[in-house]
Length: 589
Image 1 (cartoon, one colour):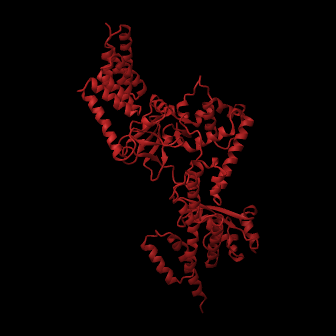
Image 2: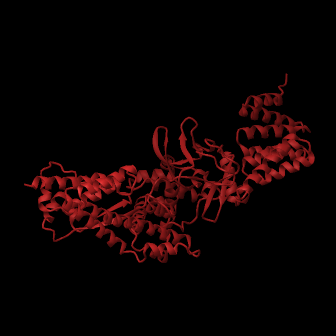
Image 3: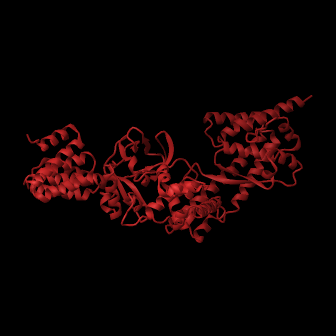
């Protein structure tokens, strides 16, 4: 008895077994094609549905288009085409497919529902004044990339890419998204990990050579270069992803012109940029000297690949082991705080997922948080600076007084090499907490200490030089004065003031790079200004009487120690005044 494969497929489809349904319909199609069955268009439409349910939208589209080729008036065939196009984020074409289907089958309720759903999405997007159907505006490379993702079983039904310029793009919502909704799932097979790079031909050559590389990022960079260099006759599996990666990084300071870098005069980021360039060049030199296969790549090639890695890398845990990964599509989310998405690698599904934290309106850009970082890291690594960033830091250089009579004793405590000229501290504008501020103040107290004050340290077997507690009124005042002098010296390295930078930022003619330079240096100046204000406010308090400082302390308590310097008043100023008052009382006859 001949088996009715269509019935088998229909039963499997209803049961949710898409693989069995696809195979059954394939068997049915083979028989129908052999017999030139006039109704075989229905089988293609049915298999299209199975592919769609399995999120294999490209194959779903192929079968649906075959169905309407065989019978152009087949309304369900046009419905299947539309569904597949929606899965591929080509919503405008999906809308046209539903309209065409309704011409042939005007009362088909499924076509009507699908068309109306598209119209509602468009209306919501227009309401929020966002471009509708971002996918329809993308270039061919991006369309191929999205299809590659779909063929690899990536899931992203409500989001798509939007191209702003040749070098800038982002992820946008196609429809309203609710809290805790899964935005995308990228399977492991589409993720490039460091382990994949190591197991590649170029990776094995690097490992065999024994060359010492300073960063594992170089392994991923080498893999990208290897795959990009493959001939068109034998393209890389990753080609659709590689073809949508930025070709240039004109917004990264490594590639700035001299004119642009001039805007960073006085900024601590100049040293970071120089250090990054030196590190990349030395890494490249070691690779071409030790790995023959690497000689085909130029330094510019290597710098490009390393820029790709550092701007897009995710740290994930796969098979119980931490690794670095490039996650196609997920790496197109731009930064914004507070975070509105959360990502994780799910071991049970072997996929990288991104979930919405709250509701997101149709058309809105969807962002990720790159974490709390100083602008110097955002700027150097990603090529942008934030206008408001509480995590900004400034480099404060504390000079050494070479005429200090206690210099030799301090040098012994700190080590000769560390006490020759100056020591630098990168600190945020926050005196209320943080190891960076404590370490800087510890150094200032030690640097300002007299010979008699140093005796305390020689009584300790292992002094904690990163946690030097306040000594007395004189030492703390001298330490704060030294801090102010260092901040003013750092400010003097800039050619412009805070007020002048604020004025410059109002100019509409600024390029993006210059604007980021100004924001970068402005953030540093504000941190330095913060510490100058801190010193100016605290030194007078150190001379207060016990009753006066208790009044100040009560004010701190009322505002729950939320003032900029309240914790310092409580933990440093008030105890020093109390000790001074007690010493005076003991000294009285």
